[in-house]
Amino acid sequence: MNASGVHCTNLDELDALLNEGVGAVVTKSCTLEYRVGNPEPRYATIPYGSINSMGLPNNGIKYYIDFIEKNQAETDKLIMLSVAGLSKTENLELLAIANQSAAIKIIELNLSCPNIPGKPQTGYDFDATESLLNEAFAICKKPIAVKLPPYFDMAHFEAMAEVLNKFPLAYVCCVNSIGNGMWIDTATESTVIKPKNGFGGIGGLFIKPTALANVRMFYKLLNNIDVVGCGGVQTGQDAFEHILCGASMVQIGTTLWEEGKTCFERISNELAEIMNVKGYNSINDFKGKLNEI
Ligand code: RRO
Image (cartoon, rainbow, N blue to C red; front, side, top):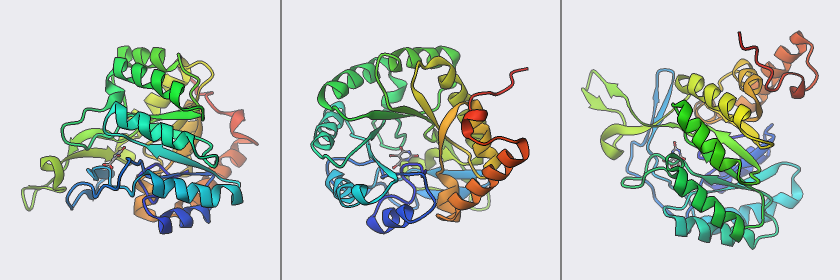
């Protein structure tokens, strides 16, 4: 599936994804109202990946609910609504609105947008995450998943997993971009994106080791919650590695942005070829079965 934020902000992009070889589609993280986002340039291609500070540009929740109401009944692909309120109150309002629509089957709650000036990521505040999820599950009776930021410390993996294990989450997606990195153009002696003085979320091959570690750790620490892998998937081999770490599904962000929607078929074919060579018939034959030497 696509990673939220890439190829899923407007109807043309969403319709195109539905017609492509994707397993599922997730919409751009939305707020209650339309947001123009941060000033451009706000995405840059860099060696081994990307840097972005889009600033949550989106068309408002109603736009995405309309898309799901129009399309979910006609497609066998699951369409997930991604929500990213700028406050707990906004998140709860978004979930309450989503709860009203019969067409919505699952919601991905984004706890990890790194690019809003002055707004820390909820996923780095364990108490705030627990409090939000407590109220979210009280308000919203639909399956809820979370998109997490990357963690870098064993104590943080354990603290977050302890919180997440208290809730019947549909899945946990690891990882959003690595927040607040920087890339510099030496020729111009300049940052490459404009918002936040050049600080932005890092994605792409750069972050595969961090993504794999997060998938692996949450796969081991979570009880009966699926892990979805995201980060650095350029090839079928990368997808294979995510699944080996424990991912049940894989999201593609930077590669989709750079290559376009044909990446799904290419990566699926490459993954199928690896499975064929290894004699695997289903991802359950190797999911989570990483050899730890
Ligand atoms: O829109 C963004 O700036 C953005 C979001 Br909401 C997110 O979750 N992750 C990201 O890298 N960019």
